[in-house]
Length: 254
Image (tube, rainbow, N blue to C red; front, side, top):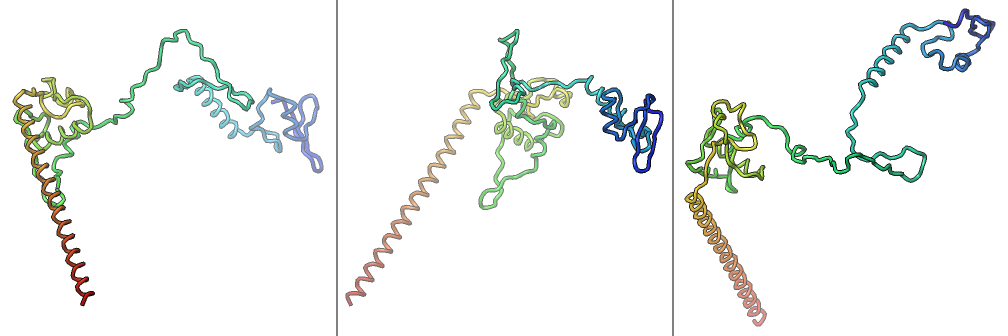
C-alpha cells in the first residue's frame, strides 16, 4: 500500500504517503492516485483496506471478466442505428460479401407448440350433446380405418381424425411406416392421426357423395318446413289483426 500513516488532529483526519503528502479526504486521495489503485474497499477513517469488501469486488471482477470472455450471440438481424447525439436517426449501410444470401424463417415452427405423444387419447370419453341436451350419436368410421398405438379404440381414432381435420391443412394419409406398430413411441409420425395407412377407393368416394346428398336433402326439407311454418304463422297473425279491427269498427258503429 502507498500509505504509511494515518494522522489525526483536533477535529480533522488525514492520510499520509511515504513522501509526506497529506490528504484530507478520500476524494482528494482518489484524484491524486487516479487509476493506479482501486479505493472502493479503502476505509479513509481507519486508513485500512476492508477485506470483506475487497473479496466481494474481486469476485465481481472475476465474474465480469468471465462473462466478457464468453461473449453473447447477436441474434438481432435488424440494421443498427448510429448512437450519436442527433435528433434524426441516421441509418447504417449494411455491406456484405454475399448479397444474395437471405435469412429465412420458418413460421410453422413459431406457430406449432410441442405436444405429447398420443395426446389424442385425452379426447376419449368426451360426448357431444345437442340443443335439447340429448346425446349425439357417434358416427361410424369406415372399416378401412384402423387405429394404431397403445390402447387405441374406435372413439380415440375418431377423435384423432377429427382433430387432424380441424388443426392441420396437410392431407391425412395415416402412419405410413410399418415399424410404428412395433415401437410407436419411436416411429410415430406426429403430423398424422393415430391410424394405419389407408387407401381411398372410388367406392368410398361414391358412398360419401351419397351420404352428403342425403344430408343436404334432409336439411333442405327442414328449412322448407320451417319457412312454411313462419308463413302460416304470419298469415294467422294477419287474420287475427283483421278480425280485431272489424270488431272494433262494429263496436264504434253501435
